[in-house]
Image (cartoon, rainbow, N blue to C red; front, side, top):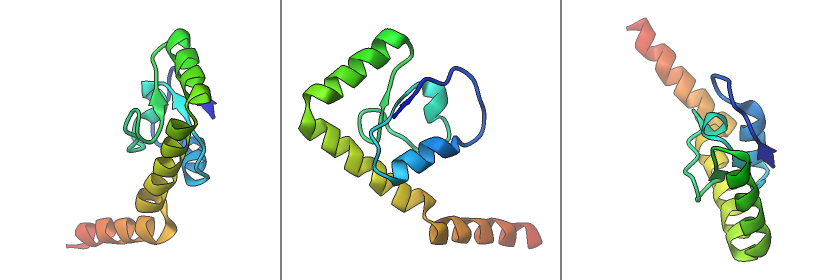
Amino acid sequence: MVVPLQSGSGLKIKIVEGLSKGKVIVTTPVGAEGTGIVNGVHALIANEATGMANAIVSLMKDEERFNSVSHAAKRLAEQDYELKIVTKKMTDFFGTLAQ
């Protein structure tokens, strides 16, 4: 999944959807902002077209790395974005407001 975002704010829901499906993502720093992605672990991050192309080619040439990034992406989504976890985080947050 290639996400060459150059501007934007907030959580990038399509990137989170990709993580949850174990997609291997190549994106920009803007695309990764706010997602918890660690470059080289959950996805590959590059600033410009050449870097993105190099990242894609490197993944195509290294099946083990491709699979590792895919599995790490899925684990990140399960740990940070599963409905029960998000619901608990929101409940805890709103609980702090009521105090």
